Image (cartoon, rainbow, N blue to C red; front, side, top):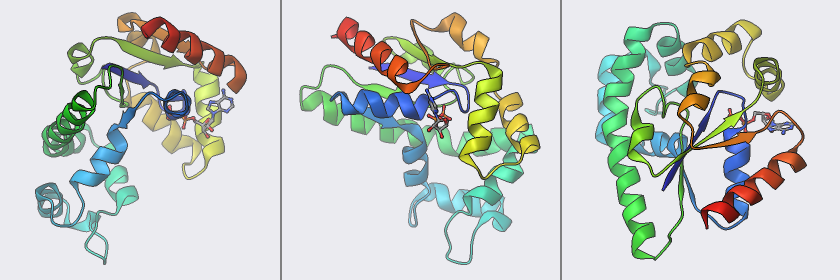
Length: 193
Ligand code: ADP
């Protein structure tokens, strides 16, 4: 099991999709994070108790609202992480055990904060997807939904990509076109297999 990370907009999801298309399972920490706050799960009650204003009229987490709160204040972000991380971890462990039972020898865990949290050390290796800061910002803005100031704040809130590159065991340079990235992913999987 390898970790897969990068900076926001560097192309983690894109690389995850390429890996999955080549038949290797990728667990997506964002999806797991959504799952642990689904109605009826204990993490939802904790989020609701801490930030009642981040719960929509349907009783579900208003994700944009919650993101606005926690990205504006590091202390709030730590509180949210303390609620979410143990649950995400437990769910990931369950999914991994399932894959192992099915005899799947290679799998990835995609998450944006693997290096920040130190969890990258728990994996057999770490793939870091890179792009220049200009490309990152350009792609985040092109994706829509965030203003330039919001996008810059989110990039700022993460460890610089270079710090992640330093602890990587494998790099995928996604500053070029998709075809170039795909070739690197194919080589990477061939090496790991
Ligand atoms: P991350 O998951 O790291 O935040 P994404 O994979 O979502 O980044 O990529 C950010 C945006 O840039 C997406 O809209 C994606 O389609 C686009 N993108 C990613 N890689 C490339 C590439 N090599 N060339 C052009 N656009 C790309």
